[in-house]
Amino acid sequence: MAAPGMRVVVVGATGNVGTSIVQTLGADPQIDSILGLARRLPQWTPAKTRWASVDISDDNTDLAGHFAGADVVVHLAWLFQPTHHPATTWRTNVQGSTRVFDAAAAAGVPALIYASFVGAYSPGPKDRAVDELWPTDGWPESTLCQEKAYVERVLDTFELQHPEVRVVRMRPGFMFKREAACEQHRLFRGPLVPKRLTRPERMPAIPNIAGMRYQALHTDDAAEAFRQAIVRTVHGAFNLAAEPVVDAPMLAELFDARTIPVPGWPVRAAVSAAWRTHLLRTPPSLFDAVLHFPIMDTSRAQRELEWTPRYTVQEALQEWLAGLRENAGMPTPPLASPTGRVGKTKAKVSART
Image: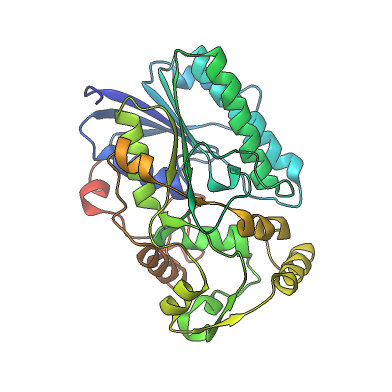
């Protein structure tokens, strides 16, 4: 375990995962200070945290200066949009990540924690779980998956060149929490898709598509896994997911609906048409990728991080749906609610300054 007095820098600290990590670290007596880096500064003062404005896609950004003296750098920053302009996401996600890694080495940071994703994995089985040794070549047609897979290769080279740096790769499934619901609606579904369609009473039937099985977890549970990776001397990759696996029967039970077998091709065609016309912001390639995501074995995280999710997937989704209905948010630019309301935060954390 780490000694008290740690200084942690979180790159991309104002989004879904970043806000949970900052709050979780702020409650840990082993953490002395947190520097949150983001393009747009928030109107939020969590415990032990100060802010700096940084754009990792900018060659002139002095990342090493911000990292100087840090014990750990946590890299979360990632652009999911615009999916119609992959060159833009590449500049931040791949080139920006490379800048973060190089700057961490130049600043002499002892540990680097990177937020990867299940989408980095090559297509895999749905009827059994795979561990962290499963290949990470991504789904070839998805920009998101290919960028995640490419950054994994960048980290492979980084580890060979910088064996003195402890590198951890966190590979979570989809992450949900109440305060991120509106942001995720904007990022993936788009403003033209009515939020009322997510109400249980609006879902009389759930399409049962072959292969549509994937994993998820509550964002706060993911943040706890990150905290454990920060304060422990672990290295390597960790799969993160809660139970149960998301599939049509699980969703049908959640929504008190029935399932209807549906071939994948008409749904894919509808997603493609909606994406091309900007009605939907999720590209059809991501729909294809989810059909091929492997089911992950999380036993390494349970064993080496002593990590067990507090929330079931149903609880995480129910909270997310409530947040969407209530226009929940937080006082950070990515999580700002369209109505100006903010989500509730844990009193024991948010009350500290």
